[in-house]
Length: 130
Image (cartoon, rainbow, N blue to C red; front, side, top):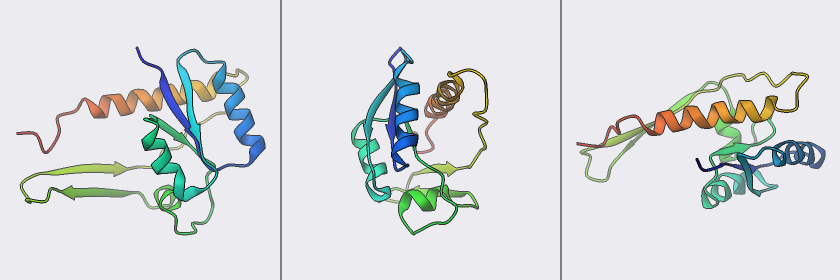
């Protein structure tokens, strides 16, 4: 099984250090890269093949793509192919995840569950497949 690739996005340096230290102890999680600016975090995470992007939640949006994804209410994207004969749907649904615990592996376990959910969704039949 390949490791879960994590990209550390925009967050205060102390929080980034905590996340990096916690996750570097997990044998099945790899820090694929980091970015400091919201507008570069999604492209860099994609370039690095990240499974999960970790970023600080923001109370207000400044209009960057990442801020708009994190904002309420949730949004779905219906992407139609150029010929109009197929489409792909992406659902951006916000779900709370508790990370309060006595153990250091709580965050890693939450990331594992998220990656597993993504893997399950990736295994679903593609709407554009014949």
